[in-house]
Image (cartoon, helix red, strand yellow):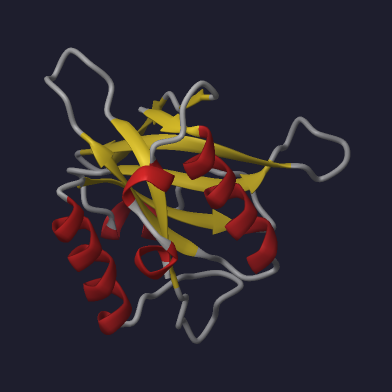
Amino acid sequence: MVITESAWLSLTEQAAAGAPYEVCSVLAGYRPCRHQAARAIVNLAMINISDTPRHRFAVAPDDQLSVWETIDRTGLHPLAICHSHPDAAPTPSDEDIEFHDPSLVMVISGLDVESTDRAMTCRGWLIKGGIAYPEPLIIDHRISRSSEIFDDHDMA
């Protein structure tokens, strides 16, 4: 999946700002023909209402509905469900795999285990038959389309 720079920055800044709690969002964009990578142009943040937000995320139904309505209104497609692991590597837990919608990519922000300064990184995953397969995330620094489609009201 290709992610515009603005969507990538929104995703990573949301994870950093939410630490030490898990955050969650949806990457939305365009889903071209099957021989081309999907292109995420916006990160739509949702509020984590979990009783244990350091280790799980849950989304309020009204918040989730608002995000899906924004996606529908703008003609975009949901491409990925995103969440963070603020104190762990960006690999799916058994619970992540069990409850994930396999039609969407899973993007996890987490600790870069190869970094010595506790830097965060993101990884993409496809979940098929209960198994997580790495999905490349390509950041496109050339364009940022979200500002052409969304205003501050849409992004809230």
